[in-house]
Length: 269
Image (cartoon, rainbow, N blue to C red; front, side):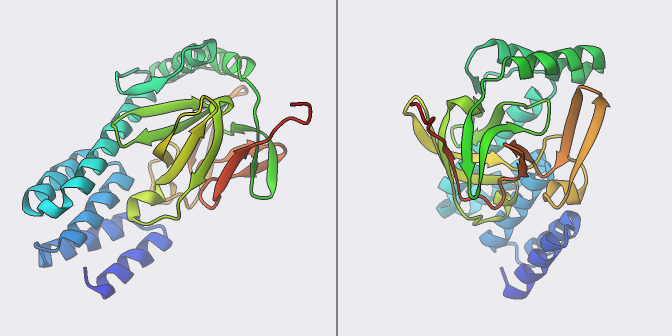
């Protein structure tokens, strides 16, 4: 892709204009249909926008015409599959591609998602209360901030979401996390799904992509994480759109600029 075209797209992203970035990327592809890098950038921007169907169609064409992109295309397709499972989960559907440990908190989380999808706010609020009651507290350090951590969104509470290049959508409790090391964003899709190496308390390790944006986000500013807004459904149920925010002790932080999240060892451990 030409430098000037890439600069224009970057400027649109900085200003929070996702649609304009996609339009410019589309023009780059139309003017240079053989430019694989331009096509890949457009595909990733479509993923950020949530237009997975169009992204998947373009990804197939990219892999057919540029065999050297096969591996990267396969990984991105798996991430898209995981994201589809994530979207379904937020509608109360537990697909086969969802990986989560059984527990009362998971049942409460499922009940909450289903109740919200059905518009039953009383049931959703009751499930949110149950979710918090069953949350196992876990303290972490994120840069200069440390303390017990949970999502500020009551519908996620003590869970963190992750997308795997195996096509799985992972739901981990913070109490299952030992450490997370985040990579600097290296491509457009990592504005929404940040690449990270995760280590669980079980000893398992692997690379995942951590969603930085709340699933219900709809505007360009929200999808690019330029804002965070809260939707108060009832006194006991507040959910977010835009950039995810976490309550760590008494501080509110996002994961977009954090390099490492590590569990704090109890003094009497």
